[in-house]
Image (cartoon, rainbow, N blue to C red; front, side, top):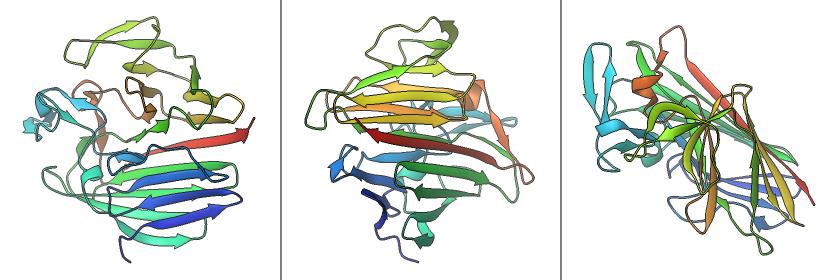
Length: 262
């Protein structure tokens, strides 16, 4: 099937999926109101096979040090699949299944599958990374850009993390855990019971982000948007907390956004 944009609908919710633009969700409209920041680099994109920054673009792969392109010098950021075209495996009115082959500059072959499933009051994204030959470390995450303002008051963010990763001058976790500090943030937080965060546009809409994953990056330093990013490990996690994808054990993750009108 082609990599043309896909529109999903359920009730008064409408989602645009963009296989040809990194497999991202390009838009989420509730009653005609767009929740995601618009633009080629925005919406909500998948972060695979790593999330956030890798220090100096290098990670240990078995006994070998691998070098990724420094697309956020001096680091490599947000994986490789957001820059490529995905393929549409199948669609229905309220669901799309996309696939993407891992390829250079990533040193291993593998298949990424993403399922985008819409109901009248929720959107669920599910992703897996599998390999058929060599094992490798990997991460999965999503990077949504929620509009700070929907035409009324600015959004507020509520969440209760167990800790905040101390951020060094290089924007990477130092390994120290802190009591959560007030924003603005470009920071990683630990939520051992699973990610749960609530975005509230007063008088308009409440949207709850949930995931069984235990890590979330919050980025709200830009005026236009607030990013709440569930992921399977912290930034630089290929080095500090690697999860090995093997032929017998894929890596899987999911995230749900559930909303209600206020």
